[in-house]
Image (cartoon, rainbow, N blue to C red; front, side, top):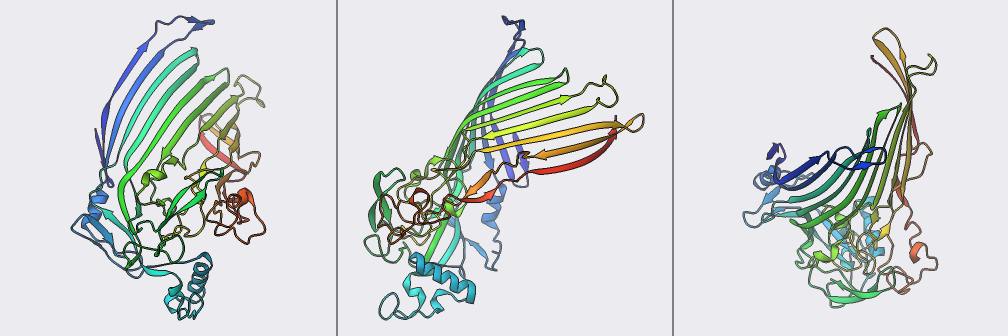
Length: 453
């Protein structure tokens, strides 16, 4: 099967087997009813036409430069006029302040004899050069997904359906980008993870060792990203659903998911650029989208139409959602590995997504009543409350640790030395582990609906 659209086409290949039987043994006072077993295996092939068109037709960048694609293996965003500067945290912060307050680039900021004798401008205290936003590897493979599922469904009661299913989904040849201008390692540091374990980590400075100015493979460029299809993601989930149809003025539903999601960062985000361009496997960890447990309950109660005029036609409904924490990465906060690009540097040898967030809890409530207006018309009054108990649910956390290593394990690490006050996990950053964004607080709304009975 092929589905097309403006963005490209999706080809679906696979097979499905379904079996239904009614000859089941008695259970309690009735029968299990209908039991259905379904096994599904699908392969999704995604061939976006937009990617093909982009290779052939240059488009202007927001700052007025044009995209020029080479005829060879890679297409390139020519980002001349876009610059990158990297140095120690203090120097980099000062350079950013000068750019934002005076509009002056580091090569024009006087800074005589601060970093070394004879130095005249701020740019000499670090690396300052052109930056290429991204080039596209035209040898990238078409991404595709593999899905396999097994489902069991039965009716233990006449008005209740229970479904148990297992789902496996894998995304292959997913797209993202990495820094192809990262040089060969200039040295190896022994750093720690959050548990205190010691291990090696490469650094990429211009001179041998792990100090000094940041290094690059090609000195004409500061950063040079390449978009390609080397990434992978996998989801495995067990799903339980129980649904009772509306009978005797009451219905309910229960949905529980136990799942695990693993990937190596297939998301074109600067914070997900691999630390080590030659070790993409080292990025594999629990996904930022991993939610181990999720429970959703819903119920509706109505008052019978046979009740008196003042008590009939009321509807009360609720949805309760409980979800286990999502994962975030602990960032150093600066270019501690010396490859110019500092957005993706993690603390010590810590893997991706080891900072566990907060549970999500919410109760939504809806109360309504319908009033007959004419013989065939009615007016419905609705009151709804979302997050009824005004639970504080944190969406994102500040996970910038503020040091090259975990301070309890290495008090002399960059960012730790000289600090007198430490915070969560020994971080020198008082904002580390604090909320950065919240889900919606309690919301209440009233509505009036007019309809036909």
